[in-house]
Image 1 (cartoon, rainbow, N blue to C red):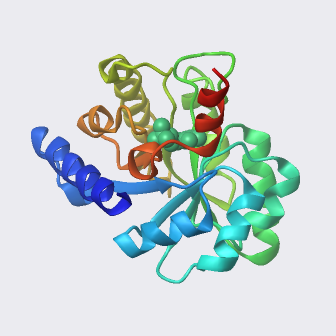
Image 2 (image 1 turned 180 degrees about the vertical axis):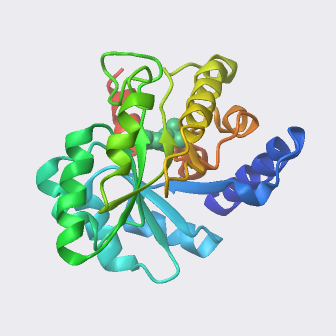
Length: 237
Ligand SMILES: *Cc1c(COP(=O)(O)O)cnc(C)c1O
């Protein structure tokens, strides 16, 4: 089941990239394993997945203890509290969800103590929804030079989560805006800053995201089926 889903998602990634003349190798599939057991993650590894996304530091740490970082990449995609920053260096290869300057600064400070530079993406709240985290897209071009000065973080790109919709076409304008914003920030020509990555697209809309330039797609239910919390809420209904 998981391996069939994996094959199907990979082939959809290939098709989406081809439709717009992109190299399929420029798109990385992040398997989102939040709420899934380490057994399920192990099945994913067996199927050939190498790159995993988690949204809670403790949960990720438990899984990484069991599955290790050898040959596997672990990305953090959730809300990162400042008091958890000290743990991320031993766990994650990339933080997708840096949503404020103070958070970037906190990572920078801890990183500097060890001489490390943590790769991060800046989460942008393109939709402006109050419930969503992220930097205001209007502020980003003037704020980004400030982020770029933090030596303990390497800003590798941008991330966004559009409003949920059953119709993936509704996500397209948000993805296009993130790409345009990335291009505008790149044109500022800040030394040492390359915004190569665009983390956008989830199970319902990753194909559209790839058409709009995504380099990292974050797919959970499309690979592993409904999460336990989703099942539970459906049972209650
Ligand atoms: C849960 C989550 C995903 C995966 O969502 P699916 O709809 O299950 O693919 C992707 N990105 C973020 C930030 C998430 O929290």
